[in-house]
Amino acid sequence: MHELGIVKDIFRTLEEAYPDKYETIIKINLEAGLLSSLQPILIQNAFEAYVLDDTRFKNTELEVSILPIIAYCKRCNKQFEVQYHRFVCDCGQTSDSIIQGEELRISQVTFKEDKK
Image (tube, rainbow, N blue to C red; front, top):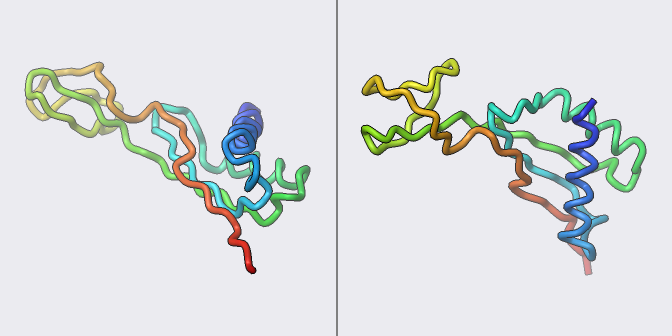
């Protein structure tokens, strides 16, 4: 299950980026392109398995947004959304220039606010 490895990498990245606030994370937002092969239900299951092991994050929420595939047409000089994996612009030109759809990124992290 490579999703568990992805979840571990996410937490490792967050620990490096926010060492002082790492343990106060309450929500993680991910963006995954359709071509990233990430299945939201599988990543959610891996996330839940991870937080069962690391109980510091048992109340942390994971939200995954799937991004459409966007390609670029050199003939029209415009971007278009790829439908049904057909990389063909409205003008009929095929394109292999992918602008969006392969990424997997942490788009937002929410931390528990300190109550003073």
